[in-house]
Image (cartoon, rainbow, N blue to C red; front, side, top):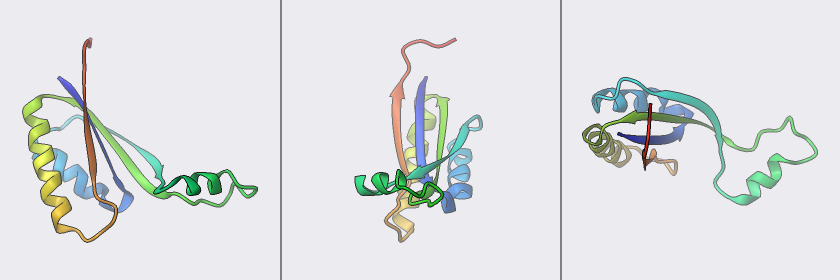
Length: 101
């Protein structure tokens, strides 16, 4: 079992959920996050006017799943990224799990 973490801009939320489903990953969690392209945006976010938002609305998805599902998900993400014209590709990482209950 491994932990797969996927990030995307908010606009791709429905697409990413379909990718998880098509990879046979039905149990997952997600959270709203702010994405930043460089360090200067983080500095702007801590400005005198905290009501201003400088990050991009993004989503973080994660799931504990098996290797074969992760391989399928990565292939689907590669295909998806090849079809969209954006600087905000869907990103994914895998983290091995040493113990779980």
